Image (cartoon, rainbow, N blue to C red; front, side, top):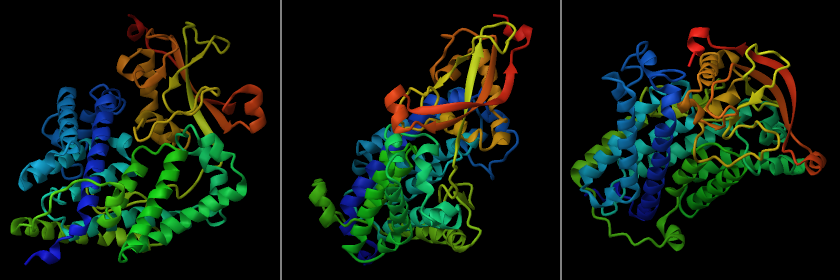
Length: 480
């Protein structure tokens, strides 16, 4: 009776997608555990208790409205990590159907609780994408139950919104996307360049035009193929995967590209997928009636929430990475509607000179991922997410936003705060307190091929001036 609700030809794709989403959850909870204390902890740059005091559960639903402490945050993130590892190991395929749904659902609630108190540090599109994908994966069912077709199509619709929304925001945004010149700049000015970005930047300009054109085709035309019969849908998914792989190879965008690749898998039918991944799976049983009711209820909810993102994509005033619900469902996606032509970097420096004189010896703090030392090759970060490094990229672009947390960051450096210093690659004072710190603004560009051969440097930089003036702690605070 419920055969029409099943999509047995997506059983392998479901298994792959669930494991990939579980892996992203593992990364996300690991990042939360490693970085929360100096960013949003009780003594963080933007403390959660202060944020909770000025918001409500309705606006930002989170378990932390009940109570907050750094210890409780560790328990929440740690529980999420354990559950994500269990899902990655296949626990939801051996648990009863209801228990598997509960495990996925709890993962979603725990990560939603973190994102909704994460403030500016969690204001990225891939956080909402993980929550929306994680919510839908909750209702895909285990390996011994046929995948519900409505959830499969909702996942395809999510992938469509990610790709088509990103394509539209580009065409409506910066002129360089329309004249095919954006990638003359983007590889150099993107938030966190990767080890290959220097070479991508120095590709011949005609190839940059090809890159932009291929991006437009992939994001504006290919998404429609995902809704067509096989093998066309699988071809469309393969194009998305290849394009996202190209982005993975040229930049660091946390788990955005990895998660988009994961979503594309659901559009590939099993006959083709099993040739690449011969995974032994049980013959799926029919969908139980109670599960069918749940699936139809979720489908109705998501269709209702899809009205706004559909209208937003059609609107000439399209919003990027926006949503209408505090639970991050029914989101509108998009990225890089505009591309910066020049790269300005905030460099943090300290000195042990008691007067903080201009001619004193100032030493630089080195970040783990963002450009600093011109002779250091850009590192590979993704799919891990260095939240402070990303926000440092935004600092020159949005000074008003940065001034809500950057002065506090300087104070933490003056205190030689250990949790803060652990976010950095190198502390030039080896854990000792500097007397003064300051933030300076530099103009960075990739070196030319000739400069690279002559100097070994990856970057050339020129000082613009002070971003924030030198500061020191009051005498009573500076005492050991």
